[in-house]
Every structure is written in structure tokens, then in C-alpha cells.
Image (cartoon, rainbow, N blue to C red):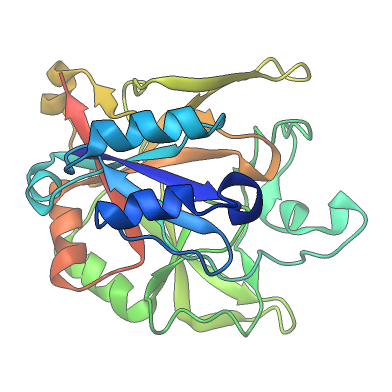
Length: 281
């Protein structure tokens, strides 16, 4: 695993005399300056410490940091956390003034819903989508606002059934205009809950004053850990985490998949996912 440091600068204010760009060019570090000056450097790269010290002296803001895993690390992971690279559209209805007329009331039981932090929704009906929702090419996608919910083609659903993946069910999706079931897409609903809370370095703790729910936001450069002794009890291919992260429309659970699901994605060239290993210690 390497940590990738990403810098994004305003050339006019941060590098008016091209000092940073000249420095990068001398060390053959690629960058883009079409709109902003953007470059990345791995903690395993030559000149890494020199570059970080140089940039720290030039800038007040810290770089964005993320973890990058090798193919071997991903392939050997017992379980992985996944999220989508691209989203398309919104659950319907999406443009309403009254929350009672929104997708929330169409699809969810809102009895325990917290309007402050987004916690407490329980699905009661299908999701409604626009006919223009395009999933045929990516086969595994999602819409904005519901980041722990995925939609797949019926062709992919049949492959999931053939593989006998566990912890999931398939829910019909409806068209918002016709109210009829869409015949080429289903919701992949995850029913299993991971037995332990995940551990990671915390960037921020959100304590909702309305419902008293506490959420921890993970640092981008933090690995995710779980107790090693629960491995023997993990018998599902898909899990949702016990904990929630984010607030409002960003409120969601972590989605965890087994090694064999990840290998299925690789073998079937499902490219619309990011993944990071769960480390069991």
C-alpha cells in the first residue's frame, strides 16, 4: 500500500513565478496546469521527502492524501470496502418543495427519519428512477444521495444468482412517469450487517443534536481494520457496516464484499468500483 499525495494549486496566487513548476520539471514529476496546477506523488517515489518539505515551505494548505493498493493486496483481501466511481441521476421524485412529495416518502418509511443528519430511513418500496438512467454499459451503478445502494442489470443479477452470492436480494425498480417496473434493471439490496464496528483514523466526529446519533468520518489516508477473530463468523458475501458516515444526503453505511465477489468483479470487468482491503488484526 502506498499513500498518494495530491496537490491542487492556483497558479496565479500559489506559483506566479513558476517556481513550483520549474521544481517539478527538474525532477521529472508530471503535472497539469490547464486550469489549476495539479500533481500527485507517491510516498514510495524518488524525491518524495524533498518534494513534501519543499511544498510545505511554499503552501499553508496540506495536500489531499489517499491510499493506493496493489493488485496483489486487493486480490488477497478477505473482505473489501467498495464505493462507486460514477453516479448517474437522482432517485425520483427529486425536485419538490415538500419532503412528503420527494423520493424519501415514496421509497422509505420515514417514521424515525432525522432531517438533520439523514439517519433512520427504512426502505418500504421500490426506488423510482427516470427512464434516462443509463446502466447498460457500466452494469453496476448508482444514483446520487443514496451512496450505499447499487443498481445492476438483470443480466448481472442472473450471474449473481448463479454464483449464489449471499447477504443480498433483488428489488424491482420503477419508472417515475409510468409507475411500471423497469425490465432491465434491479436494485441490489444488501440485508446483512457486519457483526463489528470498523476501526479507522477519524477525521471528524459528527454528533447530531437532534437524534443524538454519533458518526465518525474516516481520514482519506486511513486504512480500515476489523477484529481477526470474527473471520470465522463471516458467512455472507455482502455486508453493510453497523456504523453510518456523513450527514444529510451524504448519510450512508460502508459496503463490504467478500474476496470472491471482488474476483467476480475483476473477471467480469466491472470497472465502476473503487475498493480497499479490510485489515483483520
